[in-house]
Image (cartoon, rainbow, N blue to C red; front, side):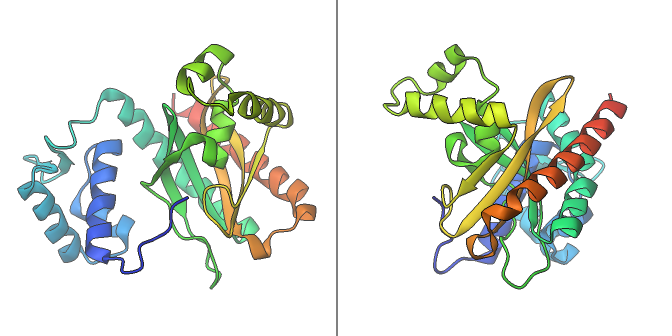
Length: 244
């Protein structure tokens, strides 16, 4: 469970978010960073320059920024993640418009899940952006969806010492059968998330989910939420196939 610190420092949070974006996605410009963080370009520039100074970022001859030595240069696989994020954004916005709740796209990295894209809803009480954040896979909706796709041997490899592996396997079997996952108060108290897998060439590559305050969730909503998520996921999958 992750709880924001009581005295959050916005500039530090923004710098860490930039570092995660650079490591995950590759090159970004000042304008792109400013747009993603919702800050002025001058603020984005100052943050990037500090990251360069501390070797978290480097700037190339075209004035674009890349992950620096501290983060290690992004590998080729991250370029696919950047493309996945870019293609998913309009679909996340569609989810927010239809369901009026915050939407996320996440990928699995080992036994963790990283949120690679988030679009917040516009309700006063809402779940904020999780973009760039990393959680244990078994504690998140997307993580459960993606773990459910793994063969037993691979799952045991990820959780070799886990006394609750048999219980997790049973839960994953149910998720695999029903094709969706619900996470209530599991990763964050007071938050409910519902998600479905996103497939590319038949393989689940990400989890598409919505998050809402638990006070706004009722079990009767679940069929409608899952139906909308699946519709948007299929549309996203079609876009991914078209970009191959």
